[in-house]
Image (cartoon, rainbow, N blue to C red; front, side, top):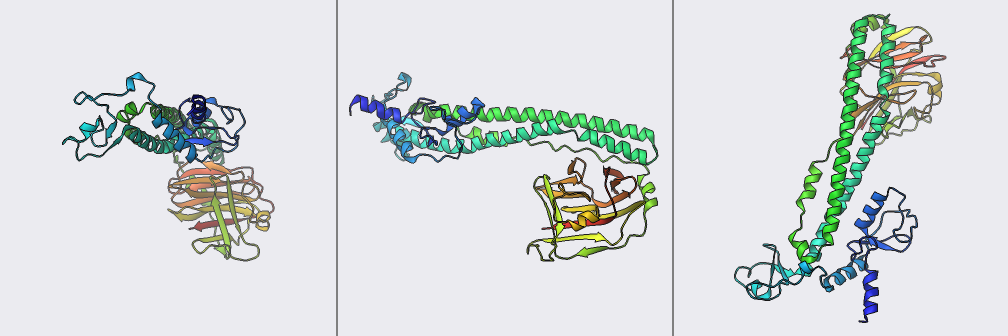
Length: 448
């Protein structure tokens, strides 16, 4: 083949980033091709919008398929090209003086033809070094795909942890709730209030520290994953003889075992002396809740949005695998203060509180988009249960209540408070509520 044609052929099979033959070639939208590992590392380190390394055209889609034809041609070119590194040139067998061109799969050594026929290797499996190198490159590339995915997953976890640390202003809200609750109790037990605020501040500092430490650990682990990915990419480009004798696969599984877990920021349930005694003074005769048939309850979506309601047409929207119901009391409250308790046991996917006439007429709306629905709810996300309140939709970083939950309605004060009866502690107070003209107790539950 003409030397100029050969050079052009080799150039078409060369990655423009690493300047080596393609490992796992992908073709982007503009038509240019690069190694998938080189492309990922190039975009990762550039910190700019994804673009072609040759023509700089912006890349919209990063879900590329490997070009099988280019990959096969690059593999053939790699096998046909003599090694350029003199250290990895033809090695001669010291025993027979012949070139070592075979690789023994059993003891991972290089052999000449006569060595392969010796009794020591007679029953062993061996193949040409170039074939063995390509086979191991393929195995290594298969390991690198999940390794890169682990790197991206760790970046997502890192971003999540950074957002938690930056947006964890829940402590200020909780301080205000505790202060309001003690004011409602006529500033009873001032010393206990100060103790709880100090405890809250100490726990908040510990959680912030845990989040910062977790952020550092995740960043460090991500760098280790990326360094391993870069190291394996470089290893794939090594000459065949050096590559097959220095290959490492076990460290990838070890890095996966070291993966740090995200922090769950949760404050303690602080006991409030006498709160149940005070609230029980407002406990009246509770009439049973009227169950609404053909209703549906949706609790979903990382607490960004919650749907609660029933079908206004009366048509069932309940799937065969779920049980959902919505109930509200026949009692209406237009003045005064009231306290009642609801048994939730050890369950989740429930919500309870009060609703006004406006919400009853306009149900099936999202709770973060409608007025008149004041709830404490619990949803299960994976293995973790999360509390939230509505109007507005706010996450509650306190332990999930088990057993009975107390609801205290102060109509004139425009407040609804939720109490963990077992712990005698405040869960949350929804303040500045608009109850006009009247409200009803409401309870909804979804069991799937």
